Length: 259
Image 1 (cartoon, rainbow, N blue to C red):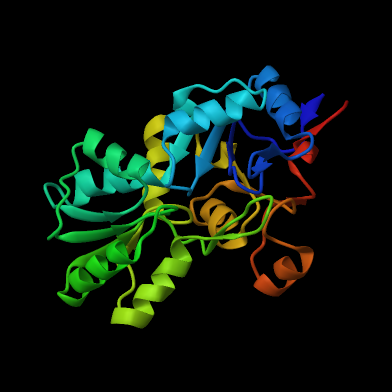
Image 2: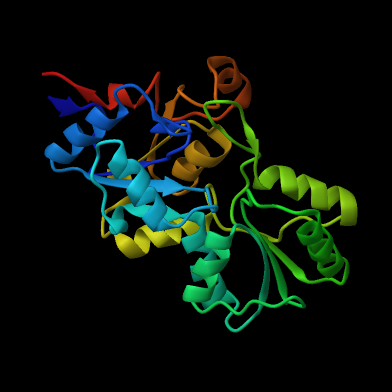
């Protein structure tokens, strides 16, 4: 048994790559176990900012693959690090779930109704009031930052509108687009990886189902990349995109092969 891709650190997207909704993709959990047994480092890299690390640990572990907190990297973490290092002491008006807001508070990010920055996350508790307040701040010229650019979040019952869809709403309502996006495929997420792991870029592999986030993240940051066709992207979308992953597999199962 050996890995199909010659790498030391495997960065896995979650939604559409390891599971759909609450259902693991067939063979995905066994593949994670096999890579771990080979001594490979396995890390989960998600743009989904509606949950915190502890929720992901619980979810993946309940599917049969025990996970530690260090293995979870989220776009929320990238946003928090960006704020602390590039916008110290600036206040934010968050559009996000209670869990997202709690994480900001725990990390010492100032929160205000009249904030310096509108921070847009994946908010499954979205209300019209939140949109309206954010729109007013953006019309006043406050900075606009988003956790990630995904337009939809895949689920087993149908796609959910994600941050990219909300970005389009604000561009329509007030003519503003985010000046900074923190998650895949952008550099703030790669800075987190560089901080956590002392591994050469060429020994890192990004695995995911989205061309414009997962695969571009790998390409933009010098990693190997694996597109899996278990989520958003189809072969037709790949052909039309011009984006060239290092490998294309039907699912993560193909990451391991028998000798």
